[in-house]
Structures are given as structure tokens and as C-alpha cells.
Length: 85
Image (cartoon, rainbow, N blue to C red; front, side):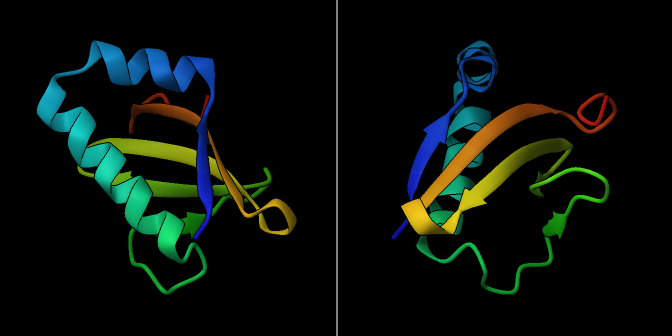
């Protein structure tokens, strides 16, 4: 199982959003940590940037996978409109 590391901006967004939504996003990230390379319709590799995108409703989670360290680094959490800027 991979460990999960949240960047400070990602933690700040999780703390600011409603508790139910934050729990739903963290549950999806924890499920991803079990096997980040399993086929998943809500995960896509980013083009032009290293890392992946996880879709949870209208929210997007940008993360990178460090396979040698068994680590998933959550870089950014934002609504779908502004996450890629």
C-alpha cells in the first residue's frame, strides 16, 4: 500500500471545504493508495505535466506517484474549472 502525502495548499483546501466533501475526496485518495496503477475511469495521466488527475464530482485532485518510495503526493485539489492553471 502506498502512503499519501498532502501538500500544504491541498491540506488548506480540504480544511476549508464541507466535511462530507472532504471525507469523500480523502476516501477516493485512500482507495487509490491501495493500487494507483489499477484501471480507474476517473484517473487520467496529465499531458505536458508529470502526474495524474483524479476526478471526484466537480473536484479534481492532481497528484504524482513515486513508485520507488511507495508514495502518492497530492499536489493540488481544486474545482474543475481552475485546477489546471
